[in-house]
Length: 271
Image 1 (tube, rainbow, N blue to C red):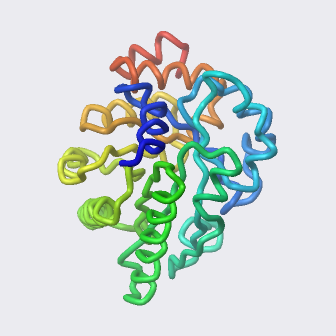
Image 2: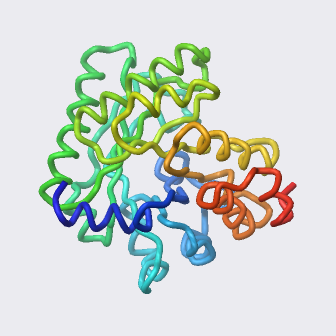
């Protein structure tokens, strides 16, 4: 790994710890969402996160949250895919680049992220999606910035558990083989440790859909960490919490300090 990538990746993990990442890029796919409409306000409130994932066009709107020593790392998304626009029930999972790694660095990015869906039902679409990841990895190397590969199975919410496990396991290994430095993907349950063991780069577990209770989200984070994840990426479960700041603190206890979900919930008054 090049020196610039090493330095930026070490900052994300604070040397050797685990990372809590806040995702606020939902508007890129889903439009206005409760809690996500005032991004400057919410990012300012969550400055204790290790990193904030955002869309390229929002970097200038939330820049003040990153203009200080000890600010979160900025993670900028590089591509757009139809699989994320769940409100329109797209099925092809086509992906297109929206910004280069170098352009993301010019916006202030410390890390970049590229999403990938495979087994879409079309060999041509799968190949195109893999090519986009490969190009993004090459661009990130030239720019000296770490890159996260997001593995997002096509139609993941409708997949039975075994198929979901298989697709995520294969996808994580594919993006690692393509050269990403980190993987972001769904927690699959009791067999998630198998995915961690077969993926030669650190994995961050994402929170996915809004869970019924905030404590459920803490339980998910605790289970992912116990399975070997190096951190989490939470969006709706954090931003739409009753107190995002308190939930972030509780999440940090679980992810970074190894606290049990129940103990962290009790400490910060989470339901």
